[in-house]
Length: 127
Image (cartoon, rainbow, N blue to C red; front, side):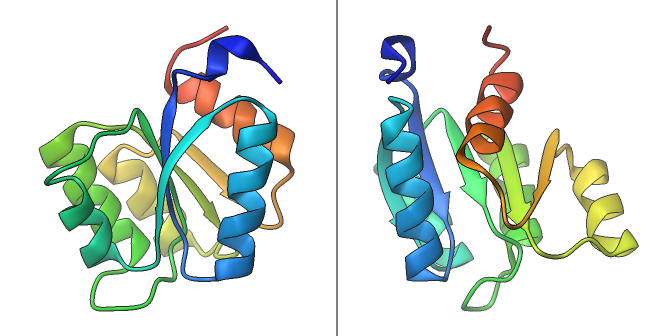
């Protein structure tokens, strides 16, 4: 466990409960503070009305009306929190749209815990 990660609050937006739990447990092993998991873009946006995090881990394919990239666009523009995309989608449209909205880290599933932890540190400019 990395003690300096314990103050980093992470929200996970993933509609597959098993994957969400796996990411949560992996991040907690690295010392991150997972403050929530939600399965829909709409829930992620409403989550911010009474909560805060430092970084969001976001899947692209989500339940509900908004996909992960649409949700990420709102979060980046309105809430100003960095996002790490973790997705099985590697098509040109998704990767290009992610770049256009300001996604700095785009990880292809399956992602290792180390990849996720390192991506979080990069988007937060941590050593």
